Length: 492
Ligand SMILES: Cc1cc2nc3c(=O)[nH]c(=O)nc-3n(C[C@H](O)[C@H](O)[C@H](O)COP(=O)(O)OP(=O)(O)OC[C@H]3O[C@@H](n4cnc5c(N)ncnc54)[C@H](O)[C@@H]3O)c2cc1C
Image 1: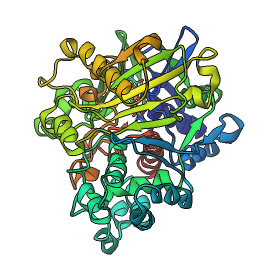
Image 2: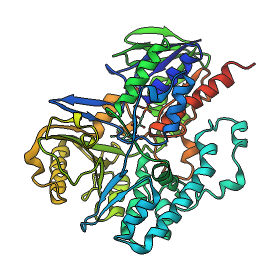
Image 3: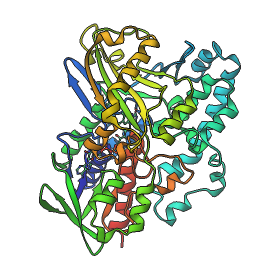
Image 4: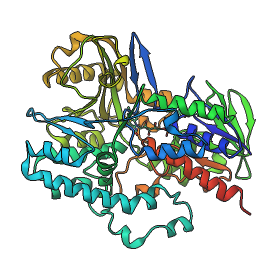
């Protein structure tokens, strides 16, 4: 079959590899001049920065992708388990290192909150049970038709804690603000608000703290580069600077795509472009009902991000590979981001310092800091053109107050990425960085499935589709699309 893939993000690359490994003729059309989408990089003045993901979880999903494509992940990528996983800095000066080794984390916790180290382990047991109940039902399942729903065990469905929110469940385990903030932060891994998102999302701590968090030697962009190589080796063809303007259909069946004023016929089209963008802007009005468009535009995007890439001529020894500087009032921060849709007055600041693990990422004696603050998705409530510079200064000042002394004097390279860039560069709906949010009990069912119900031959992959955002889930979306293609295109 001749299959066109729109977009060479992780979703597009993964599905292209899978389809080519099954013998299909696959062409990928990418708007930008290189692969990766939001997983991208900037190299300048001796510094190297990943501009998107910095942490890989659930590597088994990526492993499976390589295996299905006839090779082994370890022959191409070196995954480095991080130890510690992350260093947390609280406003009162308390510092906490988390580890994939539970006993080690508990020992750390006992130094500042003795009574809660046991609760830490109990909460992780709870998180691990959630994973057992939800992974096969909600992640490794296309959830497309009645057969898929049969996989859902309704009895265990009631055990997935969907009737309260993340924050309430965390508070029921912990009294100290240290552990409350620590566990609520995991909800931001898919861009959601812990005060609103169903407590089912407390599954995420298990994924990082029990299964482990990984860095990829050379930087996370190596994943995109390797998938690009793998796709090429399987015969996938790529066109760059090739934005797709329209998906062509005939009688509610795809016939091909239009890019750069040319028509490319195809038997199937897989869109890795954000699903909202695809449904609202790439499909002819005649095939998508007004109510479908309204439903799609009402799906709440995940949060976005404000990123500073700082090349420094020094190193801060207090920084580990991943670092979090928590804000004072965490609830107020999420209210500002998700309800008021403005940047928080007192932000939690994430700093990835990959030169800690990969010294080649900065000149000798220097370091490369990737600074990320959760930001609202784009709306009229915040004007990035007007505010970005001031906000940057605020973040740098806060980091100086938190111990990165004279930070501004050590910056020799700087680049800023705002939510506007995530839209302009990658067409992410309203600049969202993890696809759609999970700020509702029904989110798992609202996200578009990996096959269109309206148009035959149209499939979806990526963070704005089922099962959601983040590298492993995006790769899984490609497996889901493949399963549905095999189910619907190759059976009578
Ligand atoms: C700052 C940041 C930090 C993150 N941190 C992490 C992390 O630590 N761990 C983690 O797992 N995840 C993280 N994520 C999320 C992760 O990066 C995304 O979930 C994932 O990369 C999304 O991949 P995708 O394939 O869905 O979409 P995208 O990466 O958006 O790819 C879509 C591609 O389609 C192209 N495209 C769009 N429209 C068209 C069109 N009409 N024609 C042609 N091409 C088109 C775009 O240019 C793009 O290349 C982070 C993201 C960001 C931005």
